[in-house]
Image (tube, rainbow, N blue to C red; front, side, top):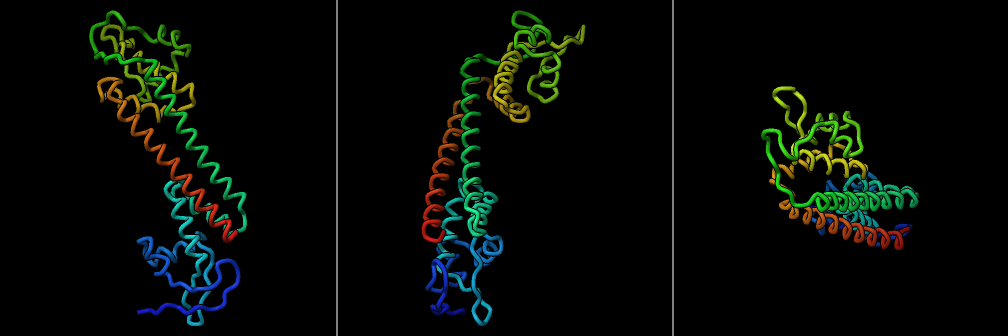
Length: 250
């Protein structure tokens, strides 16, 4: 069984007590191989080697590991790793840019949620109406396009993407948009105006259809809000840990 390395002189911040990979790994439930991998990836600063070739870590490495693990929940592994690499390469501006980018992505996700909530609120709790004979509320592609201020070609593109699903008149083959199709088109139009791609809109409307209307989606929206709040707290915690690391070792 390996014995703990004795303290030896060590220059730079965090000098002093020498630590083994297991001393860094054990408090976080990590493997020693993970610690070595983090060093090789630049997440930890390079370690010195003992005369016998073993890695000799210091309290600075332990602090770097804590900072990385604090960044991980809010930023994800690739970005958290890139932040720590930038710090250890002497490029704090790049690290700050990456932090800012994660906050900007969170803000964009908040805007998306708000736009979805507004779209649902504007549409109201109308029940879905299934296919049936043409009647009140049914419309064709031209009038619907004019109502929304878009081209018929746009509605056809939305249909190919699964955003709207009009039925066809069996006699003429023309598209017939029922009340539920009009609702879907209105929601898609609002989200598209917010800059959201069709591939993100189509799954949302699938959930509306599967739920049988708009009201049951409130639970899903509440979960979405909670996830964004948790991510915001994680970003704050990560920023605090990174700031502490930079103050001690920057």
